[in-house]
Length: 132
Image (tube, rainbow, N blue to C red):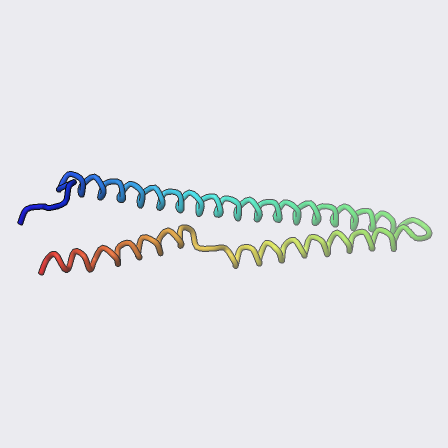
């Protein structure tokens, strides 16, 4: 049977190529977005870890001052203890935030893999029908 459409085989191939390029572009954009999200997640963990380190460092300084203050007279002991406890609590909060962030990390490229699986599923029935 001859092709009755005005574009013929060449037009069909051109449309197929345009569609293929659009699909590839969409998948690459999706991969790019997921890579960006992964980098942002890693950056957030780094910032929280840095905050925890600073807070634990401040707690160490405060407790060092506490040891020195033990040998002084009136209230430096209670003030140093309070400051040390505040920094210690802040450091613990940062550590728990890091742990929560690490456990909720999304699987890298999971959306792209799901979309590629959908593409494959859509193409498989078409190839099975042409084999019959």
